[in-house]
Length: 264
Image (cartoon, rainbow, N blue to C red; front, side, top):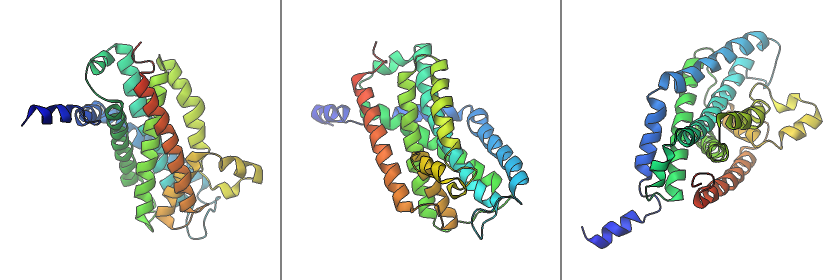
């Protein structure tokens, strides 16, 4: 292999991304009982409580029981929350413990950083989502009318939340700031996105507010894949989520390129 070829490989935008991605996946997988099993248990508890209390009192779609309706929402909520948690917690831990300097010494490009952190977030989010699905489907199989929408929104939603986690991890300088980002932005937007209800059951004003929440389109599009019906067109949901993802990805890449709060 010529020296010219070696140099060209080292200058590839994604050079080294595979190694960093592998490291990030191992980081959460070695403590899978905490990072995967615990969120699955939390989702099951939500299902048992809300499903038992509201099954006979809430009617969403004509042919869909409330418990079946709830399962896709819980799956997607788990995907989103854990994708965000993976990238954000990894960065803030590296910044606080000081081992981020070892990554800064490498010739990794901002593209490689982004691909590795967001890629690992997608893996964790989808792994938790699959775990929730496997455990909860026993209670009320929701069906799979249009599986392509399930895959598209699961991966795109996980990528968007992994990117938001990257932004939060870059911005935060301590765990308190990261917790504030999650508690005052991520959690409210997730719970007010139609996980536990259809937005058509809300008053007109709150329906309008819900339609301003990009998380609503992630969950509604994801649910479309199970039942073949949704509150809005899946193409509208895909457009909103796609534009939102492109926006936050652009911000994250620019922050990484400038070394925001990681080179000081």
